Length: 262
Figure: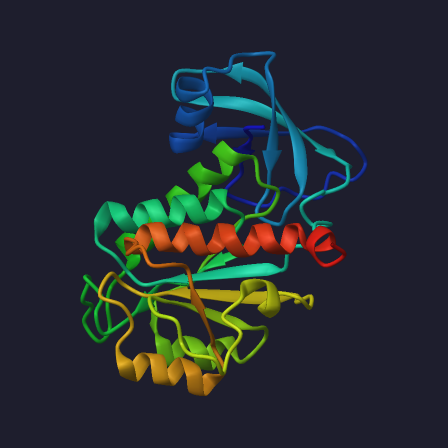
């Protein structure tokens, strides 16, 4: 179900009372001109900290509207799912391709998105890149996607980093899979079902650029303990591989109770 995503965390409304606030700019435009809500209408709303509200439109002006928020107490079914917190680490791609990766990752249930700078990236950054403009656009896309898909948690958007920097920060909080265009031999299972047979709280999926990971990067990932995943013979675009990998891993984990007992 579609919802409205708040850009802030409202004050506690645990007593069931309604809190009034005024929406302007993008939030006003989305609610009134895009969704075409009017006085008396209601829509589910989600705050960044994961609380769910009933939001009622009380009054509509030319450039702003007044809404009332009432916190809703109900079970968050997404938090009770078997899925771990999945961080998607896609190599940076140009323009709209990266926008598509971010949008689809949110819709696919990624807990966080961590863009990766690789040797074969189509996008080159200076040593100290000013990515504020891109981050602002990407953050706006995550909100739009969350409003569209009705997810019950906000996807975190991390600052782009090199593979080495990301591995150091990830710090083995959970298994890290990297999508590889070739089978890697008999020493490793290469089977997602074998990799995912045990439960995890956190899990990362790293996706290389269309030129693939360099031999040095592949070696770095292996030395770290990263698990290579082979998705078949077809050559996938980077943006396709990202959602392909996320969907494959999510589906296998979600259905684990069925295939583990089969």
